[in-house]
Length: 212
Image 1 (cartoon, rainbow, N blue to C red):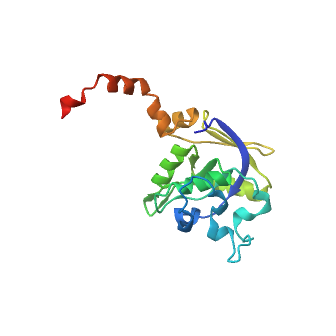
Image 2 (image 1 turned 120 degrees about the vertical axis):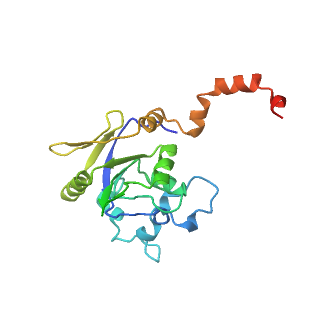
Image 3 (image 1 turned 135 degrees about the vertical axis):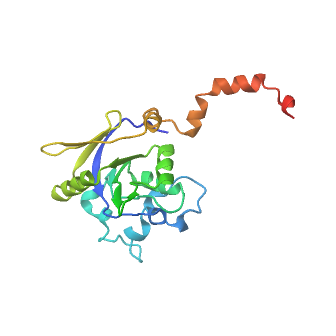
């Protein structure tokens, strides 16, 4: 897994809450046993018309969002099924960071990201950032007001910086363990291999017959 330290890229906005995994990558594209080729089908039902042509009304098809690598969206992104393909599709499209807010409705906290989607993101090196709702509103406002807004995401400093005439910065919180995994590029296999010496020692000294 590629380590994540800092990333500068174009921001794109998707003004939708509760985007589920079937919207991210519809079920008909889950038949492949390979982990490639999902990006072209990201948000398939929204991106394309019935005849296969691009849907010009879909936000991410806007010309000024072409090549975007930072997605800014609304709360509860990635809800629905547990398919890891959703993260693969997001990353293979070109996104390296997703920013979303949590919000409280009638006393109930609605998370920025569904738990399983967030966990799958960590395993694949996709950085999910939770900001305050008013901070995400500010980003939407800036992206709408100015064209081709770029931002730098600094994981070490836990900062998102919008590159405008007057730069705007936002601090984000992240679990220290998750931060360490992303900074070092450690997926589940790499984490296990950190204990390779201990595993070898155990296998050498462990007498399996004693536990039969």
